[in-house]
Amino acid sequence: MVSENNWRKFKIGVFGSAGGDEMERCRDFARDVGMAVSKYNGILCTGACPGLPHEAATGAHDYDNDSLVLGFSPALNQFDHVNNFKFPADPYILTFTGMEKKGRNLICTRTCHAGIFIAGRWGTVNEFTLMCDEGEGKVIGLLAGSGGFVDSMIIPGLNQTDKTTKATIVIEQDPEKLVIGIMSALEKMYY
Image (cartoon, rainbow, N blue to C red):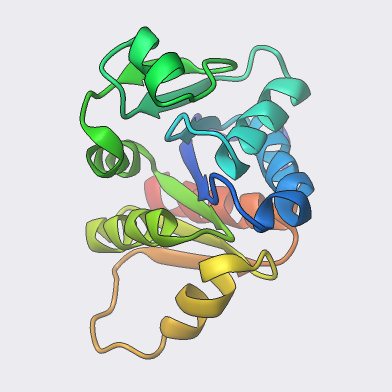
């Protein structure tokens, strides 16, 4: 039985569509992912962008105001983040990378123990391939049924390449079960 209080503090990235058609359909999925990360004592990390990652951050914060939510901004500073990128500042503890979106992706994926992928477009594929290349010591969670590139490209492509990853991959349709599977895999891996 999974206890809500016995998880160590793992950093769980949430990656997915920053806008587009998936927003209305996946908003609740993303919020549920964020709530589950908070419920199981994880630290939620995103690229500090709008869309599904922000919905997950909001879900974590709504579940518990004291949840740690880290945002890795592509901007140089708070002014750049809010005024030039037009990205949300709350509920994040922001780290300003000044490395634009692709550079920010590398820092965020390297910081995380695991990444959860919801729907997504090309930026999400970039984050997914970064986590795959990191491999050993990483857990990749795919929210099946969320649409976007997760369902159309990533899941179908897992067995269609001769380059494999050393990352552990967990696929689930239920957001909470996905987080539990990721946390369980991390516990086995690290403890």
